[in-house]
Image (cartoon, rainbow, N blue to C red; front, side, top):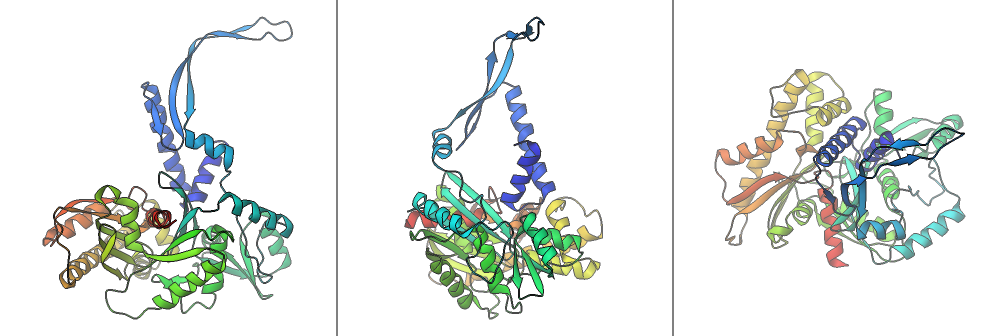
Length: 458
């Protein structure tokens, strides 16, 4: 694997744009080179210890009568692998690297395995992972799967979107050759779903279609259930071992608007149970608490600012005290900015994810509109949080300050934390806060919290 391969793999696993993944890889490599250059040792949990080791001088062997070439003394980079890394190399090859496809005659996918091999692989993987646990963030924008242990979590993401193109046998064969995930809709259309959907949408200058809207299954999208089922099968294999699976669901809407939350949760639970899992839902905000507040006895306020909703949970020692959701988040920002700038929402989302900096003045009309609607979301979120705390009955007596942790893709832009902190402190807050911070990895926090809940239940 070279640097280009590493960037591609990082983009595929995280769901980030390739440019963003490249910046992350470049920054990581720069830090490693800088630390090693100053003779510091780098310890990475789950991988091992990187350090410089003196290299003795020597000679290259002579060839075809030429004299041996001297090799000067110097230093070489060494890796002392951790026990977890050695065990992983010896016993597992990361079962989530190979995409799994729906076991149904109505769907077809690029790069589908022969049925015999697929059944053999399922048996092997089930034996390997019996008793393991999984966490799944079922988000409006992305689905993120977390596996492994709390100190060595692996994540993989798929875009929760699809695009339809006209069917032809030629197009289907090209998709298969390029291992693009798709399914057939009768004999007229092909539905390209997951991470590839956005690339096709950008090429054809159109918008992706969403199986979910405002945190739940999209009632206006006739293919919402089969498409999200197909995306889930990209991330999860079938199992017969009854593995623990915890998946995220939004809280009840703060504004009282009716949602299909009960239907949404029941359909997902039936799907996962039908795949052989012991599944249970967990509030999205509570999952952030589980992922980020172990040092605080799982007490604090977890906020997940995703694509369809902002989900909030106040928990005390892992027990949810107050939960709610707000139907203003990333998609609301994208749609609103697209409306006032006559630009597509997909293009706005790319600008938002790759270059938006809320800590600096806007640089163009798109950033100006993004600032306006980000301010609207943040103010609405803080006001809803204050009101919900005031209305909550039997509030526990919290004897020490608690943290607030922000997660989700909408909270990623630089400056979001500062704007949120200013809005929270502007008119005071009913609880004493120890810190306000963004999750270590905002895009995977909910999935990691679901995994922790599954591990505790396993």
